[in-house]
Image 1 (cartoon, helix red, strand yellow):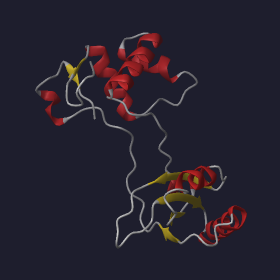
Image 2 (cartoon, helix red, strand yellow):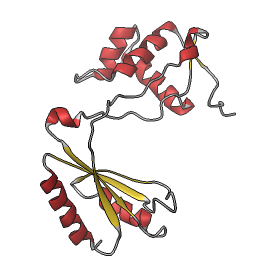
Image 3 (cartoon, one colour):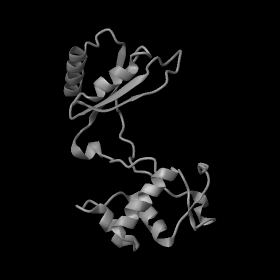
Image 4 (spheres, helix red, strand yellow):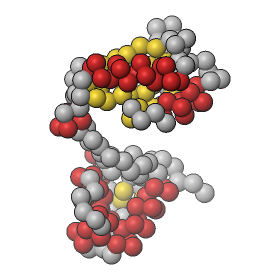
Length: 180
């Protein structure tokens, strides 16, 4: 029987400490799971088993890396949106995702009549002209001249953060963890 998305998952005190530590991000060390284990009073194997259990239950959907592009001097960030025939979007998405300059590629539904685009890819760079040159090379290499697209450069850097595993109502049920 599957757990409903809103059902709490019983948590020990150590697991609640682990949940709070995970919200801050993994420690930058050769053995991040061991460091987390030390900080929350568990062994490394228990931490890894707990994270795996939370993933299976839907509390953690994925683990990823938040890169603060502006801090690294990467300020010319372009979202390229493509209007790809629906029967070709999967194949083109895989090809674009394989391009070295493409840092992110995903499909989204069209929002007709105003937004015909269904494939999105990010190209990050230090200067706009370099990003546009990379895009031109991709268009040429992948023979995409006939595919309508737009280039949308970021105007503002928004706050980036990792996943959150607590909810406002946790105060009422302090023994549980809740799926996001």
